Length: 570
Ligand code: NOJ
Image (tube, rainbow, N blue to C red; front, side, top):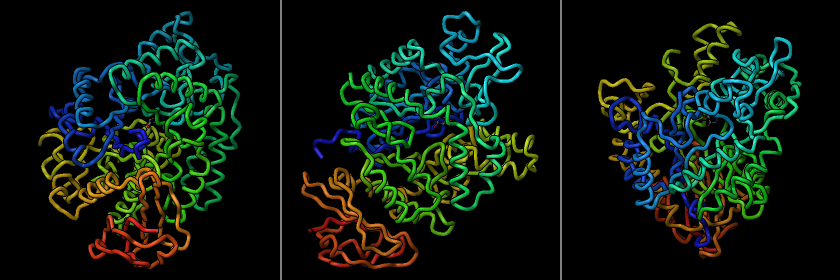
């Protein structure tokens, strides 16, 4: 345990600043709101925070369209507020990492304003510009947010490339000046003391230099339709292949690795900083020490159902492929994905399923990332009216449905809610007061508050209830901290367990501790023998009151959805 770095031991918590805490009653979260909640975070037991973009932005993509990489969005506060927030984290022994958007800027960023001002502007080559082919775009590439990836600029009579929205032009990373400018921004935050970065969309940083056409057999709209109707795994696999073909010249080019190595060198000039990439690709660990410190285990999060077999297969595959010294990183939730209970729940046992999901995050080998609101079981909130949407992607999808696919409006709204991400970005539910205590009564919050805060899904009510999900989180976070094998130990799955049971051993020889993790994924109880791993020395945690004092057992009967953790003697 002693040899581990802070980011290997830490539990991270993602804060979506717009929705976390509104200190000045304008309906928008802000940095002072975060400062006011630092003790809350410390008490909950998280060690580090990933802050989604806090930079000035015209908000076409909710901050992922950055207009100034070294500033703070005025509605969130000032640079001084930022420094106070950072100090506040550090004073409490916590860490802060920022979101770094490398692939693109906002179209309002001064670099792009200059670049688009004339063909001869010195910054012209900072973005990807190209002539069209006749009256068509340079090629048939799509934007991930829908439509062509090219936008015509009538001022200079050329097209610019945008993998995401047209308000997010892609930088030309083949130009060394771009790298220098961005690395200066990186140094700016590292000099200030920020502990690292979550790197946004690294896979899309480079695209085929020759701008070759893709040759997917269907159009993007057809693919949307197919995604909707796909039922069998083989259909989904086919769609996956087509999707990869559609974007093959725009994704994960080898050049990204060189850039990650260069960025790692910059970060390594500073003691104890880290990088985590928004990618599931193990290749971005490089040799385990020369690219990213971590990448997310997205394949686990992408499972449609949560099963012991799925988790085991995922762990087997990932851990085997990790290069030496690489450290895993697990998450089931973020601002782009569905809320946990809404995604994995079965509509009846959602909270129990949320509990086993958290137990998994906190006991698998690797650094866990949690998402704000997960600790109280916030759920997806489906908006009732397209005018409430703030996610441009969701709105775009609605318009495509209506205009191109001729989908009836009520159905289009369902698809827009499914695709769009507003449903997981609603304000944090702090209490049972008006606006869930996020903003004062009467204030119109930037996204509507999910009314289920009145049904106990809020922090204050759950703090008072010893059996709540919030208290479960807090307890489990402590158990993890107190038991080094759960952090530093290796991972050995137990093979002879019932189908609905996931059990594994975490053993840390350096710490002289071996732990058993056993999770029942089912609404029925089930038993299994412990003789394949040893006998129980001490129960560390159980969701089942009567199991809290088990000792010396050689077999165990898990209650429905039970999470059971014990130290064992081999
Ligand atoms: C990934 C971010 O997580 C997402 O929210 C954003 O829309 C895209 N990258 C573009 O920056």
